[in-house]
Amino acid sequence: MGGLGNLEPGTEVPVSGKYKCVWCGTFVHADSMGRFPKIVPTVKFFRAGKTFKMCPRCGGSTGWTLIEECQPTVKWWEFWK
Ligand SMILES: [Zn+2]
Image 1 (cartoon, protein in one colour):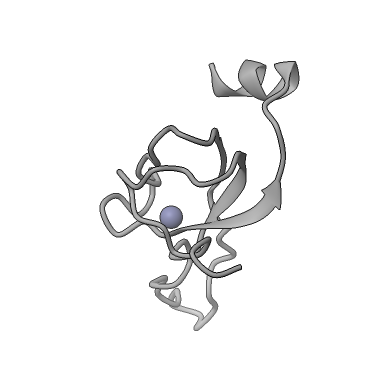
Image 2: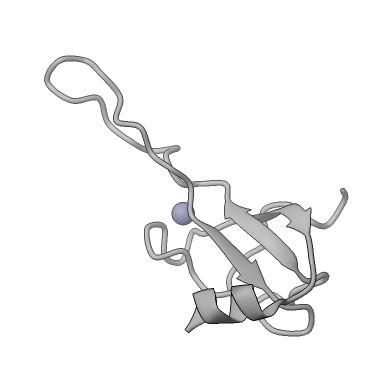
């Protein structure tokens, strides 16, 4: 999986697939009860040849990691609108 982890926004997408932001939830703070909130990492579909966008939660420090290689489908394009 070399080269398919922690990819920065603006980097060219190497393969079409679903990518997870590795930084989501990394810097969360415990609440007053000492519990850590459950953070669901941002997962987005990116198409090969396009460039990565920023994670809405992490902005410029986003790091995208491939979790599932897949081709764009009607379903995903509907999701993307
Ligand atoms: Zn993120």
